[in-house]
Figure 1 (tube, rainbow, N blue to C red):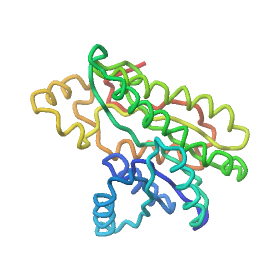
Figure 2 (figure 1 turned 120 degrees about the horizontal axis):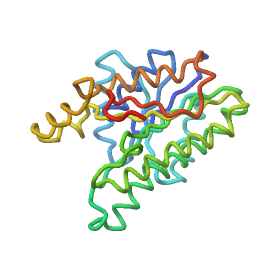
Figure 3 (figure 1 turned 90 degrees about the horizontal axis):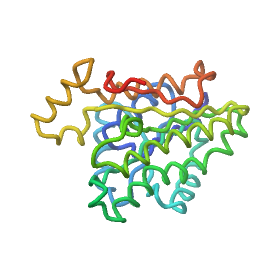
Figure 4 (figure 1 turned 120 degrees about the vertical axis):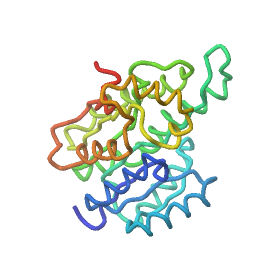
Length: 247
């Protein structure tokens, strides 16, 4: 690893993204957190809070659903170094039962959660293969494995994440670029914290380990998969869900 080896985390300023950024910085990478351009003010506040805690990530803006913005992001990052680790973490929800789901709700989730993974990964796959090293981690979801009421769009996109993972893993394995996905269960992020307390208790009662996950649980899984010693692991989906779904 050199000082110019970069790690890019899309959606890096969110709850999961923050923990992943910190873990990758601890592993020795120069980390860049991607954020949506419309969220610049909150991203800058996030950066200040990270520096106050002793971390030093970079920030880079791009709407991952826009291919041209992802091209520009890659060009900007190239001035700082070479992206050797990519974590496709950016995602949104637009929940609705299918009978009420409007086309824009379907398309927005597909464009960000699935299309965004293509748009970003496409920028870095060739340089990783040329270098003979790369780690790509795609954040899926337990709901992509089992489905979820009111989330046909999200569940479809997250199921697609692992299909993408397996295909690209086959294409890149001979060049020592591994591609894996992680499927979190219920993680204690802002999204889960908005669930009413009675419903949260019901969720916890159905989790065999008896608690919701922490962002660090996902970050630890990322750290494991990006480690040089994990070079024989590719094309897998790693469930991190406390046993709520076993397959």
